[in-house]
Image 1 (cartoon, rainbow, N blue to C red):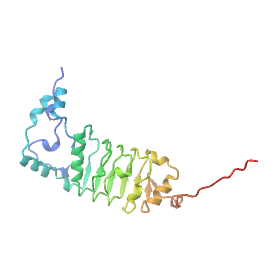
Image 2: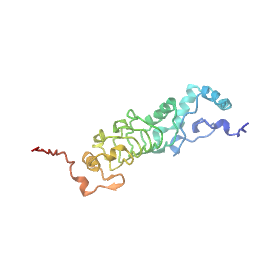
Image 3: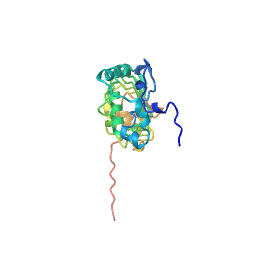
Image 4: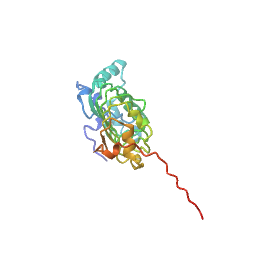
Amino acid sequence: FFFQLPSDSFKYLGWCDIEEHGVRGNQLRCPRVREGPSEEELFFRKEEHTLKKRKQVTDTEKWEKRLQENWENCAELNLSFQDLGDLYQVENFKRILRRLIRVEKLWLVDNSLTDLSAIRLPRCRELNVNKNHFTSFKQLPKIPQIQHLSLAENNITTLSGISDFRHTPLESLILKRNPCEFQERYRQLVFSNLPNLKTLDGIPKLPEDCSPPDVRFFYKMCTIL
């Protein structure tokens, strides 16, 4: 037998589902936005007592919730460690990202994200997507104003697609602990594709990084006597 705390019935509620408060999304820095389990899952877990706080939501209440979330006016937001274990949770998460039209600094660390290519963050200058499951630069959101991008501990295997950031104001890039950093002439390749880049993996641009990648092929002929 487990004793239930008075707050137990609230554990799957999002911040904006709690009644009688006027806090808006743009006033928060690290909100919990992950959707709770479905009703079927709650019954399976024998946690149906949490359902009593749920009710049928009218269209008016949905609109009021949207206004309260106010994601459109967020300038700085940390949505890391959301534990997105189900598809419906990922879809709700992407719904929020689509509304971040004014966000300038965004952290999405350790969310098991794989593809945000359909997301556009028009004002984002700083994006941290460390510890996710990206395998390509093509899977990143559209970030035309990006200046600082951190992709550490993903699974990006090649530098293919990195040139998409060539016409952005990208100044610093972190690719530590990705397979692509073991590519031959890694730093030269990155800097040759990103002329505005000043820092790679925390190390400023060095003179030897400025020379173009060596694309010459050397042929050795062996003569068998």
